[in-house]
Figure 1 (cartoon, rainbow, N blue to C red):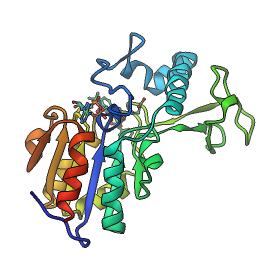
Figure 2 (cartoon, helix red, strand yellow; figure 1 turned 180 degrees about the horizontal axis):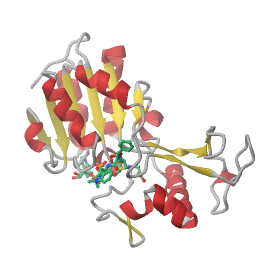
Figure 3 (tube, rainbow, N blue to C red; figure 1 turned 135 degrees about the horizontal axis):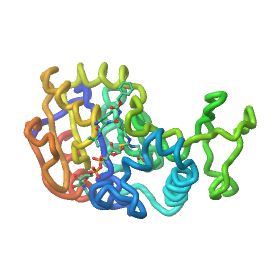
Figure 4 (cartoon, rainbow, N blue to C red; figure 1 turned 90 degrees about the vertical axis):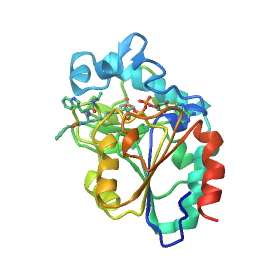
Amino acid sequence: MVQVTQSSKVVVLTGAGISAESGIKTFRASDGLWENHAIEDVATPYAWERDPELVWNFYQGRRNQLQDVEPNPAHRALVTLEKFLGENFLLVTQNVDDLHSKAGSKNLIHMHGELRILRCEECHETFDMMEQEHLTSEYVPCPSCHSQRLRPHIVWFHEMPLQMSEIYAAVEECDVFMTIGTSGHVYPAAGLIDVAKQAGAHCIGINLEPPMNYDQHDEFHQGKAGELLPDFVEQIIS
Ligand code: BV8
């Protein structure tokens, strides 16, 4: 069991599995389907051009779900780890839900965007759109330039994830790299562990089942993040 001190640099990458015990379906569990649409068919810029109403309703439905879910012990364990490490801790999430920030995580990058936020395709302003009147199936005009081109602030397939240079900089100099609740299917997120290995980091995985990039991990703990992570964090910072 690796030990971390307050001078250890730790990067954590989370995926849909860390939110599963909060009641948010993972992509694999739903067979990558949403109401019989393949995620890759609704989470792309082409789908948005082809059928904006389908894509809008897909995201409005998931945005509405945010009102009914709460962080679980796994989200809170990462806040404990961040409080111990301070600026030496970075949390990178593939998730677009708001459970990490609701739990209190601060050094947090949403590399695939955020459900709560919409972005104007005209003026590129971003807006937190969680007011009740915004959660309808009707389009919401841009509050700034009033265009009808507000899109989900989500990184779709074939779009470049956000803040990748910051993420690579942190992974290239970390001592410990953890993957939690991710199947290792989607790139470039799933390739971050290769960068960490190159940098000599100790790579730890916590997941319900071995991820696609299992072999890159120095240690792997199989099980539910909400059950394993609180004790794991207590042990490595003691
Ligand atoms: C890019 C936002 C290039 C959307 C997401 C052809 C052309 C172009 C690109 C590609 C291509 N072919 C492949 C690619 C790359 C592509 C990709 O990786 N495709 C996959 C399908 C092979 N990637 C991209 O397109 C990326 N962009 O490459 O751009 C580029 C280059 C230059 C310039 C411009 C562009 C963009 C990828 C981002 C897509 N957006 N999310 C939305 O959410 O609606 S991806 C989305 O799926 C998630 O964010 C996440 O990343 C992924 C799902 O993965 P996980 O989070 O791991 O979830 P999953 O369900 O898979 O696994 C959950 C795990 O948890 C399971 O293992 C389960 O066992 C475990 N679990 C369950 N319960 C628990 C648990 N573990 C612990 N405790 C529990 N209780």
